Image (cartoon, rainbow, N blue to C red; front, side, top):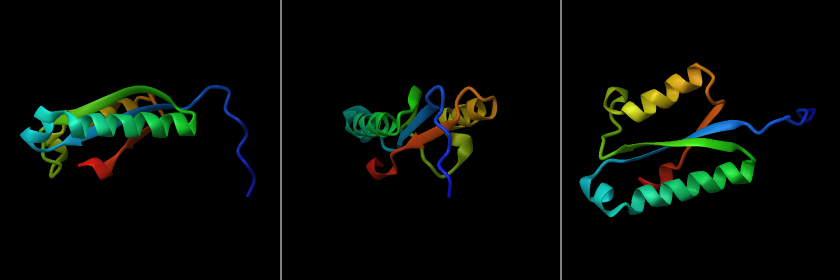
Length: 91
């Protein structure tokens, strides 16, 4: 397999984080840990992290209940960014 040619500019990425309990929202610990992990992953990969969108205190059972995630997907569809990343280990 051939290596891809180097990109002239870094890939633009949007991070996404979510916690689903009020306790997690109030403590901020889950959100902070997710943001740190997302920023570290973007830096490791050489991505330009243009935003970290957050759905705080919302269940992950339905897309309709996650406006930030819907917004991220909309921005990806409109090419505002090329990739999204999250840190599922912190939920």
